[in-house]
Amino acid sequence: MASSRTVLIAGAGIGGLSAALMLARSGFRVTLLEQAERLEETGAGIQLSPNATRILIDLGLGPRLRSDVFVPEAVAIKTATGGTLARIPLGKDAQERYGAPYWSIHRADLQAALLEAVQGNPDISLRLGTRVDDFVVHAHGVSAACRARARTIDEHGIALVAADGLWSVLRPRLGHRTRPQFARRTAWRALVPASTVEAEFRAPDVQLWLGRSAHIVHYPVKTGALINIVAIVDDGWSEPGWTASGDRDELLAHYSPWRWCAPVRDFLALPDRWLKWALYDVPPLGHWSEGPVTLLGDAAHPMLPFLAQGAAMAIEDAAVLADCMGRYPDDIPSAMRRYQRARRRRTARVQNAARNNGRTYHMSAAEAVLRNMLLRLAGGKALLRRYNWLYSWKTAPPGSAARRDVLPGKGEEDE
Image (cartoon, rainbow, N blue to C red):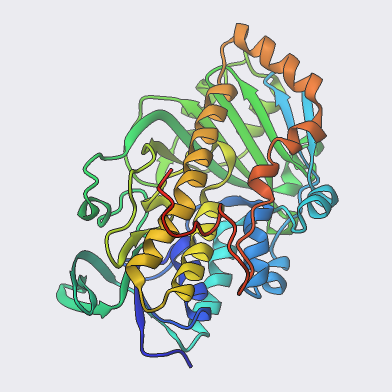
């Protein structure tokens, strides 16, 4: 049983649930505060690269997740007219190169596995219907002002982790006044039974189709039973939220028959129900932490989806935060500073790489000629090596001397 030291976490998304499990393993009690009355199946598919899966497996979730995941064989990069530009090997290649698998999974399946582990841990208390609105730092830690079913309550702990997402309520309390900026892109998502699509579109790959001002990503989830589709277009629609209904004809208008081949348009016409959400961005923040309070996941570094790293970065954050706090349990402000220093440079690099991919995916016709030529010349294995810096990342093993990119030493400055 953990000691009486309690860490408060605001938000029970993937980052918050992961952080709760890792902090409990590091010897802390955790009070996990989530404003939703229940954790529902939100979102659709997500990709989990080796930098994330090795952490989840280390948490003991491997057997539980393997019954739900799909292991893509490759990332197949294609043009809007149907040509193949490159095929980046995953599957066995990723497992052998990085020592951990590359998975695709339905977000609800990942959330369910994390939630089951949280609910089975006696050192974690999950309180639904409880929103953290504010906090006060004092000599004994931090007090969080919460609203629960029209009542105002206070929660007390030695630390507060704000894992409350893109539209974080607590981020401004750390001095960040800039609101997320609309990226002038809209993402549309849908799921279709694999049995209903043509063979090309149910191949065991992550397929990326590139076109002018639009692209498509699709891949199997639910062990291959469903195909998750994400279509992203340049657009001016900017309504916040994740669950706005989308009209299929409106989507197809972005994929005109003059630019997109008929098989792709037929594939996009299959789903009866589309949901859409506007993409927002936040530049890298100058600081995440103040005393015993820190940010995690999208609250700290919102990720555009063009590198498939939003969930992975939140999981990495959780691992490093728990490691820092476990090493410095009696000096939480110092642990938070070390966590911030360890994560800011890497997450900023991932944010920038995702932005660059977004520009590359939607190039004009003239620019795309050069892009396509370079992709063909590079080849899949060379393109995979470009992401060694991303997929090979590991936390420092317990008790080992920390690497600089995981736990900076005393006196190092933020980068």
